Amino acid sequence: MQREGISSYAARNGLELVDIVEFHESAKDSEHRTQFHALLGRASAEQLDVVVWMWDRATRNLTDQERIEKLVMAGLFNLHVASEQRVLSKDSADSDWMVADFNAVSSKQYLRVLTTRVNDAMGAKAAGGWFPAKPPLGYINQKEIGPNGQPKDRGGTIALTDWGRRLIGRMGELRLQNFSLKEVGACLLSERLVPDIHTTKFRGPRSGAALIDAILKNPFYMGRFCWQGVWYDGKHEPVFTQQQWDSIQQVGKRTTYRSHKREGLFSGPGMRLTCAKCGCVVTYAPKYKGDREYRFYHCANGKGAHDVQVNVKEEAILEALGESVLESVYVPPERADELCRSLNQAHYVAQALKDQEAARCRSQLADLDVKGDRLCDHLTAGVLDVETFRRQQSRLGDERRDLFDRLQVAQRQIDGAYLVTAQRVLELAKNVRNQWETLSCEQKRDLLAELLENPQLDGTTVRYDLKKPFLVLSEMRESEEWRAREDSNFWPLDS
Ligand SMILES: [Zn+2]
Image 1: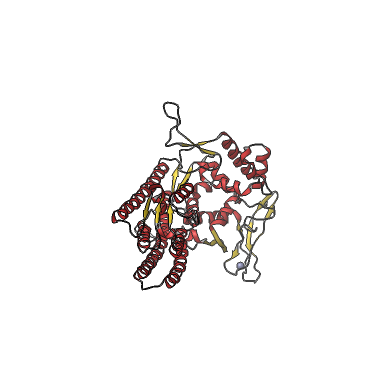
Image 2: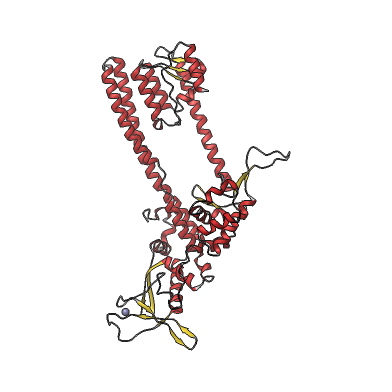
């Protein structure tokens, strides 16, 4: 429509159409409009008139508005607004420029209101328990039905489809039976649980393993979701209960090797102990009395450091490690949630630093604009010849591009992955006590392996180091002041 409007406007007004330049960049911020500025540069250099269809195509921000006015007033080009049959040239009346200014202001405000409304509406929806965006596989956005039986325009909820309930439910079921992700995918396809439009996702050599993994780790399927860094209890129908979901999370972590009869909990690759006194490996040395097996460990004593062999029972080691680690890692739910909030805060502080860099870039870009404007003034005043003007303008263009690149980097959102990791750590810390009793010995050992490193046997007692995230957590927990200094308790961003 714009193309046609511009062409016919040009024909009607006896303008020779040199080129139609189509671009799709937002007119909201001046610094994002590289193509637009390139176009203005070309028009100035080649003395071409610029035709836009509507005002808001030319500018929705006041920075560009003023720049265009300067360029036009300098006689570099004329600006036509085709839909309004309006031409702005260096001879235009002041009132024409004022109308142009008002147009820019009103476009800008329209955009501002729209943005705020959309954000508010989505936030309110999330707080009300409804995920405000496109839901994950298996769910659909459902329009609410009004009293007259017609679907309403606004609002709407998220519904679990029948096929979604079967597909995802079966996915979890198979996974809990220790099927590999690939096997689960193949199973689902062969059981014809995948709707035709989604089958390609489960085909291929990996049978959609990555997708299945992502689905089974997504808390949305047990009724929770995260919106703009905050977790909400969703009102949508979950596929899994919290308990089922927790068990599914444990599946991948279970070590795949089957512990041999002759292998102890602490002698396999899952976790090995060393002797605190001499540094030798601690060996598993079961003793048998009739049918009974006694699972003992002792230092290999490779350096002959011990005169007497001390034997320690496996249950004793497991129990001692468990008790001590749970004690230092456990975080009461309310504190865990508080920590979670302050982590989010830290995230936004880091974001703010990036914003500052972005602001610096913007202000330097603004300086460039001033220089550009001065160039125009000099050209109009006859201080500069056209050749020099073009040269200088192209140099400014290069600088502008460099700054723009820097700005893009600064504007990129900080990677939120560490936040997710931290949230997982906190979830684990919160639930570790309730989970512990329900676990088998192997699972307990595996859980310990996730929480601690460098386990050592010192005579009959055990020592260990907490892994870094849990160490930080336990230190934060022990510090009496951390509540008071919430603002300064940052999760180390590099870990
Ligand atoms: Zn030793």
